[in-house]
Length: 210
Image 1 (cartoon, rainbow, N blue to C red):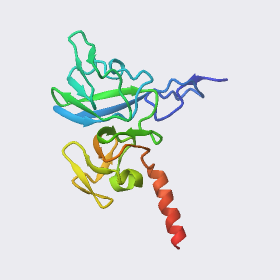
Image 2 (cartoon, rainbow, N blue to C red):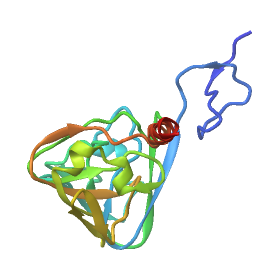
Image 3 (cartoon, one colour):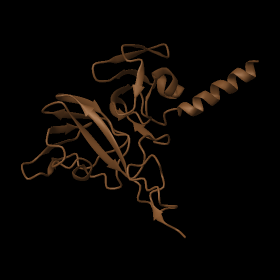
Image 4 (tube, rainbow, N blue to C red):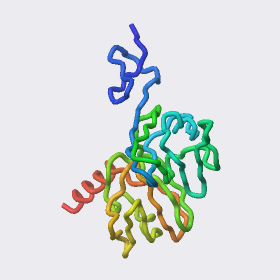
């Protein structure tokens, strides 16, 4: 007989007795933040991505405010967020200001990390996320068409400048859960190169050479 429940062992509410997935799986992603400003992004979000649902203030009393690209939100004494930032976007980066060292946890209906996010960037500075779990060489996960219109990338306390198609500087890798300013000479729409696809491409190239 069928027992509905969460059958994904990676989910926080995995049900070992269930044998049919009922869509109830939940995944908790923790982000460790320090006092003052943190440049971060989100690896997963619930279906309701409103800021009041993603970051309920009763669970996050040490958040002083959030700044995005051209938007912002701050907490009110009544436990609600107010401001032009009403929803959290997986493709965006955010400055999250904390009153003290603390962590925030986001409960999502999907596991953290995405390989299919599409980014629409404009001329000038764009504050964006990095969608993969882990850290990857900046020169390997950016498509060539993005590299040639990006003059520099800035993270929290680190940066890299594009010199003839190679990024050099203290920022040598992009990490999931962090936010980055990309400075562009032209608008572009793109997807980061999936590390798995990159490995396949490299292997294919090496096989052709041999």
